[in-house]
Length: 214
Image 1 (cartoon, rainbow, N blue to C red):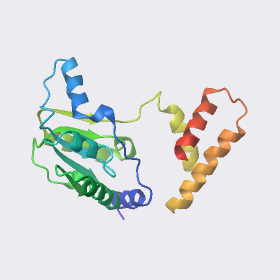
Image 2 (image 1 turned 45 degrees about the horizontal axis):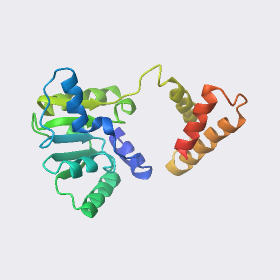
Image 3 (image 1 turned 45 degrees about the vertical axis):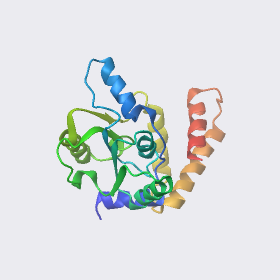
């Protein structure tokens, strides 16, 4: 069973949070480009690709707000893509398409997008996939195109990385998504409840993680 298939099963069972991300909006990206004296593609008629679009919570609002634009979302999870299509039908949006599959295997034409968004993906895939994503972005971007690629970096990621490592250790050997999620939530709540220094930055961070995981 390959990594892409495993990831699809995992995200089918536990969907990734999908919501509007203001920094990824073409209007914001065009302004950022202008601030450093770079040309940017026209926003009103932009062509946007989102890699790892989940259920469309970020891409659909863009499509609604920019009716003359064209939007494509790709995600490895068929269940999340189907949820995005349902939302699209309910909204009556016509200018967005969805593809279920590995973006590195989709044959997009060169220079076919003005903006490419990849959020919440890069840090969770192996290096060969990271390099493949960069190759896709380089191939599909128009000459003045802009890519938004987010990833986790130290030192800011250190606290969350510690919590993640503890949860991975606590849930080792639990393969089913439901029981694994429950065990992770219970453990982070236990860590927060048993911590002594309630005013420490780490304990406050644990509380925030417990709230997010809940």
